[in-house]
Image 1: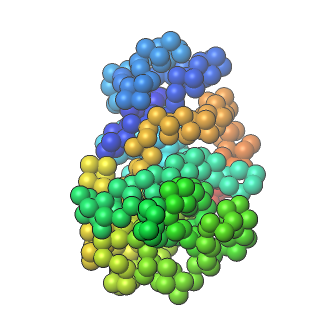
Image 2: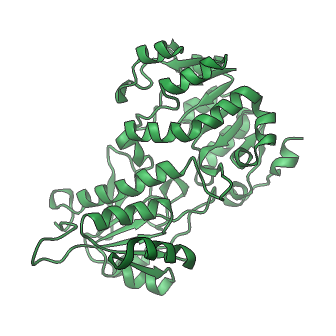
Image 3: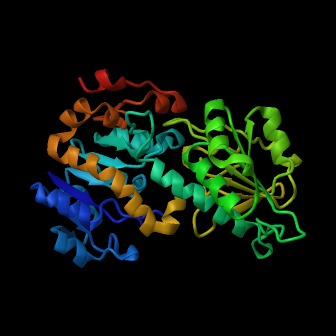
Length: 371
């Protein structure tokens, strides 16, 4: 199979879909890989390293889309890229379609088969291709939240861990999954007064057992959320419904009970955000202020640490890329029920029910969509 790796063009996105090590694995199996010029240069993965691994370097992004049978990306294709996709082509990337109706329609119109990293599952019910980026985003949420709390960033001038004689900041994490756990770990590591809220009591028990008395856990009732955010300095939204729009846990009205110049970091922004006032931002302009509350809503947070993120992501995606290349789309997804969960669109048919519900449109389901 001919696999194409375009350079990411989203704002300050430096990750790349396949590393030279991944190229070597594919080439050894008899496949051909074309990589766009400078696709990984920003993180030290030079064109020469890709050539040494067996890839062909292509100067034009459009040529990648024109030639490749399988396109391996990181972020969702931007508007121009979506126009280049073709029927019988496979796109493998993060898509987050439930929050983007225009992208959904463009991908349907393309006729391509589109597989979303974020909904591929594993035998434990986990999300193996989302987990590494969730872990990174969770860690970054505290790093970015700390920065936003600084005076010169418009914050209230609080050091997260305090100092002797001065109380630490209060950090609230909404959601105890992979991202929420890492956010809590980072916050506690810096000495913050940290609380995690979740609706899954078994998960709260796990976190309590793991972290002990350094972490407060609360059931995520509306009352508890309101009480928690009213005293918070930093709130991290880390809730996830796989493939679906994120629930709005903090409404616009609720901002009035928060302390002025406190910070909201929305890790669910790719899925529409878990704060009603959230709107997508970029690394160029990461924050905005709504009712005196600082919002950080960057849609590709792991792109800020692209080298770490690329290796973490490609460690997880490489077996699936190889399976698609070896077997083709039909055999790959019919023989692997976990990869099958990632299929969002196939030849103009919407496969995922969660996306259909988000956009109030019809869907076909896997069995019907692949017949």
